[in-house]
Length: 232
Image 1 (cartoon, helix red, strand yellow):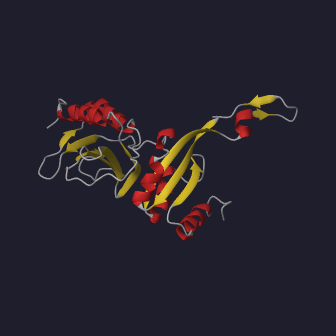
Image 2 (cartoon, rainbow, N blue to C red; image 1 turned 120 degrees about the horizontal axis):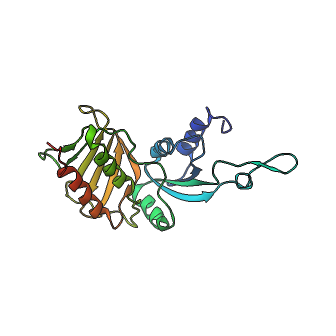
Image 3 (cartoon, rainbow, N blue to C red; image 1 turned 60 degrees about the horizontal axis):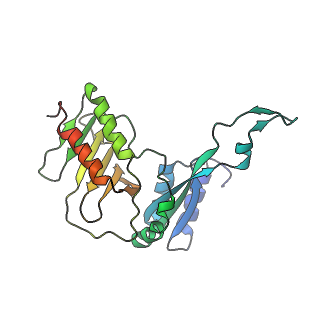
């Protein structure tokens, strides 16, 4: 089952669901048959999910190149490096402790957390606070800049579970068509352990985002949205 593109996802999901372990650690890469999002959703059945990503050299054959039977180099491969994922899933507190110990040696996954295509973004600060929109054909550069700032935030792996706090998060929403549901939301929690959480519909994208420039990045996004000439 693991050797077929059609049967492998179901076989892997079955193994992850059945394995007798509190925490499951799965090694994968970005050239396999499952996408990053599919892999995350598969592992979410076991509880909280954190993903570590490592830039890595591809297999030896890819680095050697393409040769004919006489040994002459006749072609080159498209790339010699890929992204290796280590997916850790299980109880939230234990997973975060495990991941926090090695997070500094990893790089964020290459997949964009907020994809392109937004024609409208809004920023709101909780119940009763109206969302401030940026959206029209002439605002494309501003929307792209806001998206770029979110995607540039590094992964956030706290060494311990962050305490709950009552700070209402700011929510940045990306819409492909005004009047419809947003395709992505970014919640900025600036109290307690400051971090940002990206969600696509009901699915939360792991890991959360943070880093020392989180507040500065949020402030810049807030300025772009609130002081844009076309806001209403």
